[in-house]
Length: 207
Image (cartoon, rainbow, N blue to C red; front, side):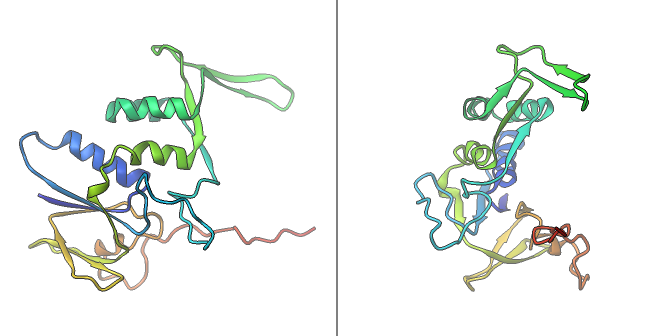
């Protein structure tokens, strides 16, 4: 089966690893991940031209992976789990207090040594842990223009640079909120049925 994944972010890399692990052994599958930006381990980290994206940008959001997330990662790939705990900041419990300092909740963890409840780290570090497990030779640096779903045949992937179309048996969209892949599911819709949430980045508050 020819499998195409659109996007080499956290979800795209995780999907690839999950498919490699879960698809029946003995069957041969061809994987290709299409990514608009250079994301290999040897790619230069140069943002002087302002061309940045969430996967490679080393300054930005941080996040916490809670117990259920860590369990999912560990079941997917033990090496990624250990990489996350090395690169992040593990803590043994979570605690919530009221404005008066009263304890509202304390959640500890058992069954791991050392005890790890959650791990905080940058989004880039988390992505790097996944990306390092994906071979560079299956990642193709091309921006996808659209995907055409064909129930009676192979799906078609079209590219922004006008290069020849590619056909695939399975296409997985992991290209974010502004996904061009999801339009293949609703080709009859003139407008985006599920638009991304409104951004308040430029909201000006009264002084």
